[in-house]
Every structure is written in structure tokens, then in C-alpha cells.
Length: 90
Image 1 (cartoon, rainbow, N blue to C red):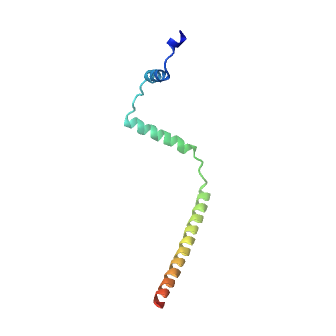
Image 2: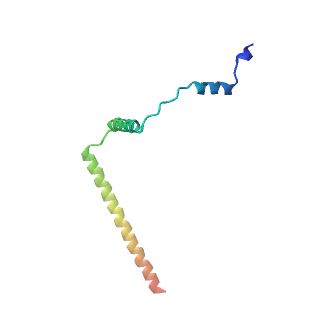
Image 3: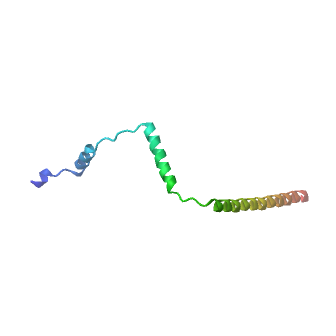
């Protein structure tokens, strides 16, 4: 008798899906407003560095970029001169 009351697993899944209430669709304006509210709350959670540290880190990055640019420039000039000297030998 118990076997008559049992449903196949597929039938149970279909019943569960059928019983879920339909979600209300939000308008575009509501979606945008929700996005900005979430954005604002997440921005408040960020721990910002002090301005002094930001300036110091920016200066380190700028000096590093300039140093690498100078090294690459020197290598480019040296290799160009080397290749043109090889061209004159031939």
C-alpha cells in the first residue's frame, strides 16, 4: 500500500517547481535604484588609505615607470646602433 502513495522522483520535482510563486518583475527604474543603493552600501565598507600614503605610493609608481622607460629607451637605442653598425659591415 505504501508503494501506491509514493511518487517517482521526477514527479516530485515537477510538483515542487509548480508550487513556487512567480517572481514579480521589477521595472528598469527599480533595478537601477537597487543597483545604486547596493553600490553606495558597498562603497561605505571600503577602508580607504590615508591621502599621505596614496601620494607616497603614487610617487613610487611614477618613479618606477620612468626608470623602466629610461632602461627600455637605452636598450632600444643601443640595439638600434648595433644593428646599423652590423649593416655597414656587410
